[in-house]
Length: 115
Image (tube, rainbow, N blue to C red; front, side):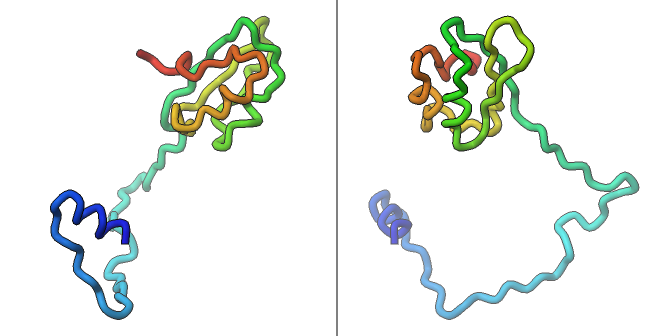
């Protein structure tokens, strides 16, 4: 397996081979047994939303449509085209489909990230 090759390459011991099918035994209904009187609150809006204006933007929405994670949206009702990036959804510089899709080549992913 790839794991075994990796371990061998870097001098780590091999993983043990498990025979048969392991059985998972549930001993509790959930990890947190007492949720308290107010219950459990989950945070769904993590990450940061950043707004950027691109001077040459034609609002063709090619960048928005190219994003596989739906991380880009357009701010409506502004004088200048404004793109909003949800950083928690963005695949970052590993993807860059938004940049490649821009016909004007004015979209720059780096504009959304703080240095």
